[in-house]
Image 1: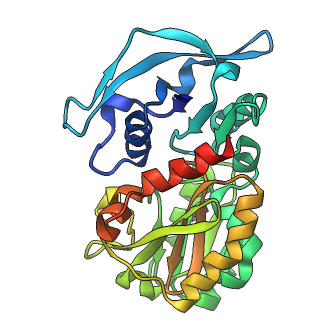
Image 2 (image 1 turned 45 degrees about the horizontal axis):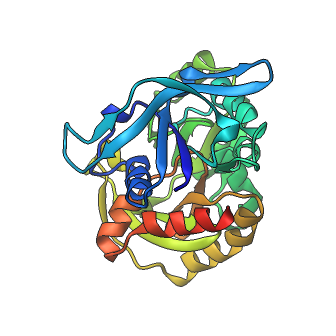
Length: 312
């Protein structure tokens, strides 16, 4: 039996049919591991030691509305745990970054998945620029003239927040769109961060490929098809998953990333590929393993836990 703490969003609110963290927790429970659940709001640095208030997970099952039974609340020193799954969703803000510092204090004596130091230093839309040979044309800036010139050159563009997630605030701007100045103004007023601008990839209509990489190796993939009238393919905003066989270009991208991810201790990673272009490397709480497991008739959760347990 392994002592496992899971740092995540409210467990009673997860969608058990698609949530990756739930699938990982269920596999761990089936392996007989001791599971403890807490949220970041209950994580504290107390006189140099990290403590979390949370609850033991007594039972997990795929039964909607009755999927989890929790024990009484207790406090645990996280240095006494063997594994911590850091699985809370972004936004990747200072709150998120602070908790990576907390967990870095006990890693790797307590194995944190993914390595909190590397998660902090691999923001999803910035880390991808390390592999620019696979990326579409991209601009990251707060300079309005640079954005205007980029739009003039590539005509159709995508604008999104640099640290956003889940398909939120992603805009497709065509040449005739007269809301462009107001949209940039809105971004700049809402945040003092740069924004990311990319050439629009029309291939997105045929799908956005999500590949799960486990310790640098391909675990599986799905294609996510946007709804009609939407350019966003994220499953929780209506994207439709379908079976996916990786082509040569997609395999080449995975191979190029594998050793880098493994060397950084990024055990569970989700990458996004559109039309042969790498658009994101998701290292915080990548999703998609339930859908991939279904289409490929496998158990990705089991493969992930095999790797994690071997690292102990």
